[in-house]
Figure 1: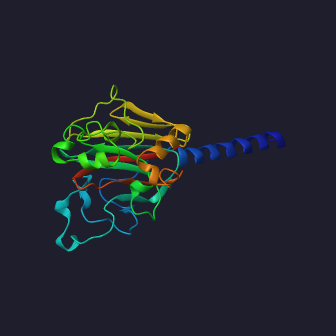
Figure 2: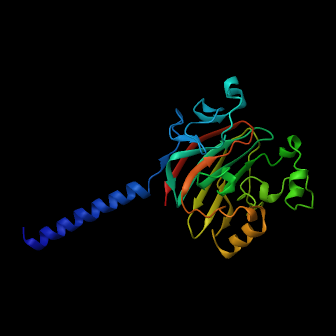
Length: 255
């Protein structure tokens, strides 16, 4: 075998190894929940899971019924994060279910050290659009943030699929399944565009850190939260808002 042929074969081997390594690290799904344990998950700003979270019937579950009497005085955050790895650009898929009147959220690019996750991380809103206000009076809260038309009603920026308090979902594409049924969320984040999908339909798209994004942040709810949305890498997390929650088939693919 001559020298040129040998060098060519060596080049092919190196290229093949590099491609395989790249695909293994950037094009494969990572399971964040195996249906058996909550390994890798912990409280925001904490070292262990907060009371109320566990695995029931292969589903990541929060329930006040699972909070023991000794944990009633727990003062830490009940929101949880996948603390084993941070992500920048990604595609995240989560199946979720909430009860009537339920409320939660999916956060990304979470940084710790703040009073709470919403202060710093964008949120894909999860809520019972149809019946939330049957259980909760939000009039005073909405008035406090400047809502003057129908403050007793859930606002578009507060509804399922919204980039909470920033971008509302496209109601012509949105098809939320009722409380008590499973929904599928897909979040695709790149620095060029963020996409929110719900049950196979694209319902929100925007450009992060664009002039439009900055204007919405500055003039809305996050005007007094200077670090909101500024981080380009961070943890994935779920919000406990006092209602029972169920999650399954949680996976992420770095992009």
